[in-house]
Image 1 (cartoon, one colour):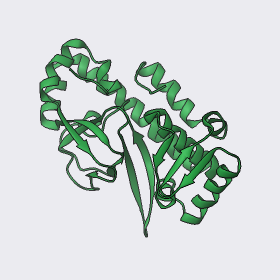
Image 2: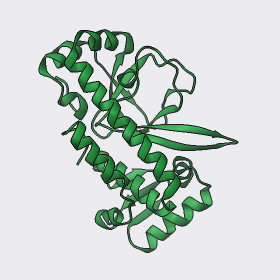
Image 3: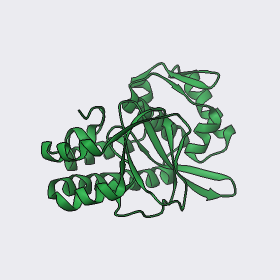
Image 4: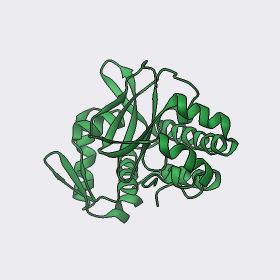
Amino acid sequence: MITGSNLLAIMDPGDRARIEPELQEVELRAGTVIYEPGEDVRDSYFPRGAALATYVVDLGEGHAIEAAMIGREGALGGVVAWGRMPSYAQASVLNGGSFYRMDNAVLERQRFDSPTLHRLFSRYTDCFLAQSFQASACNAAHSLEQRAARWLSAVLARTDALEMQLTQDQLARLLGVGRSYASRVIQRLKREGLVQTRRGGLTILDRKGLAARCCPCSAMVHAHFRTVLDGVWPD
């Protein structure tokens, strides 16, 4: 029985029965690299439950920035592309947990044989692109505090966990800024009573207050998901 993946949960029952035998459950720890840039993408991964993955784009000279976060609403790999194409960004596990893994060659055959499965993954591809477009615009236009609040709220929405393992160095890398900038933002959120820090981690104290500091980007992506692929985005 397929559980824990919102994307697979809304699949046509016939398609679900066809791909279930092809899915392998794997446990991946936080920090595990799934794809390196330029590496052939041989498998697709579907995060389950509170598991999270992230795509990070290398900007050169030691700088990088997150391009997309994927939780139980989505997938990585051949779901959004055909064949074993090379990965453009590094994909790694942000929050450890359980994933379904499926060989891309098998997935491609299943998509070819089933119009409903192909339609589902095409719609998810549209939503994934919308998320990536919005992230690009957000990184260019919104304040660091808004972006940090949006990122923390996005993790919270997908994991339902008020406590997360996160260092300021990690947050700085995901936001594409220096550690000192990330530190100042976290200290500001602490003074406002929104978060509390501990060694190697962070606790959300005021979920609604943090949401009020967010830019509208997540809400816009959520609205697009509801229109194109309702029932998938984590509430």
